[in-house]
Length: 292
Ligand code: SAM
Image (cartoon, rainbow, N blue to C red; front, top):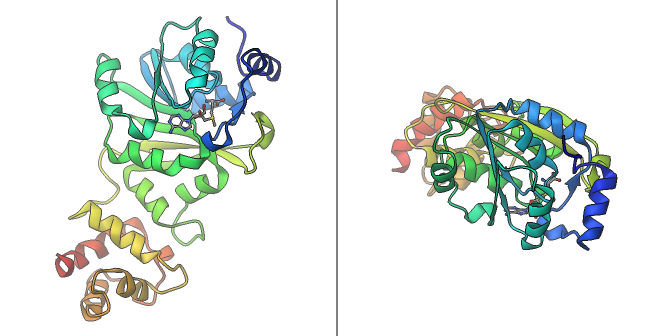
């Protein structure tokens, strides 16, 4: 087997050979611990028939581990300076393709059609750039890609918000948006010491397993998300006060909002953070006709 990229010594040697300087603005914190990488691959349950999409391969630390387990890996990297490094470090792996692109602008479905046409088990695995964690995850979910799930490293605080349950202080519109599409779990807490350079925040790995159908069935997805975001606009306010101040003409439609809350069996004095996804689903369906 080839020598691992993700050891402190090899990583330092690669960075020195290419005179690479980290760009903080691109969230460049590289992993230098093969055990952590192996556990990420295990959580993703990658097998020889799995097609894997990676975001931000860096110098190839995770890409290499994915290439050893997957049928094929396609990785999106925004930083052009990493391309010659990757073609060197990943040269032993014929099943890897690097695409030089900002993943937020990429046609991921088009890439799937082209690169994974003969594969029906697809996973996204990444050590995400922390400055764009949420937009990347939301893009992958909202585009309804044919993936089994997503296993990613991100800030611990964001991981806690994503997998939070109702009634906790971390639970909010991000928890709901992601749990609507997936079953979300925080599977590992990761110390700062396994990265170069070390990030300022603690990290965690989450596993998002895509649901066959969204967690609740609603009349209008966009309106459902609008209602959930509105309900958390000011966390200390009651659901009634948030909805009257956030929904269009909410103040004039207070009676209608009260009627919808009653029909959904939700006390107007509750706070958004106490409502389950099912309750938000009922509420947005009851409000729908008053706002359309
Ligand atoms: N996978 C490597 C590892 O674990 O060591 C590097 C992870 S580092 C946290 C994030 C990587 O994402 C960097 O290589 C960075 O250049 C890249 N990146 C940042 N923004 C990106 C974007 N919008 N699209 C694609 N790659 C991006």
